[in-house]
Image (cartoon, rainbow, N blue to C red; front, side):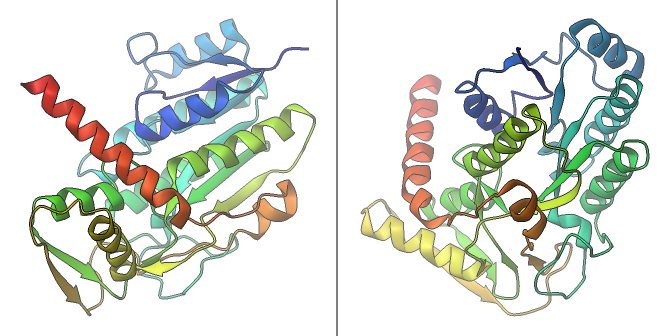
Length: 295
């Protein structure tokens, strides 16, 4: 029997990673474009779900935009409409969320039982999106993520690479800690959960996933810089300034305890370090392609 999966975004870097991972699976994949479906229109989303009849939804709509000033509306609106559609048709939902829900909490590692306490618009938006889902659905997974890195988009890795390759000044905070997690690793985990759900798994609730290799922001920046030096990729000497003050507008810890994902789905955390060089090479390749396109 075929299993139909609805993926709400294939345009963002995280959405593309999910789409790429799903291409290897036997699922029938639904991935409507923004022009095909208005994700902020509840009636339109309900009509689409009724017509296409998916068996499971993976939602990353607005996930990346939520990190930009004023970009949180897409995340909240999509969560609201999907919650309504999934409730009406009794559909399970995997919703991607973020460590930013924990705000200024000084706890070193956040467990699934910790109460959200956001201190930014981004964190507040992720909390609101979660609550829209958890308040009306019983069959859901809210999957919170740590620092998500990749060769595409705006993330900890791409920002460092842009600055280092330009010889720009970079501030890194030794009090910021996280577990860098590759976009492809997030996709691996979400699809593994989807596969088990398609086979009848009934494990629901709030879960966390991040790499099993935590570090401070300055440690991550040093790893990136040393890799660029080893590969002889630097054309200018970057200036790195170490900051040792309480971070503003960013949770001091993005390290997540992943017990529920491990116990319920057998998910094993991977280190980000083996993927760093391939990601850097992919980013450089993308940059060269962009240069040639603009010439």
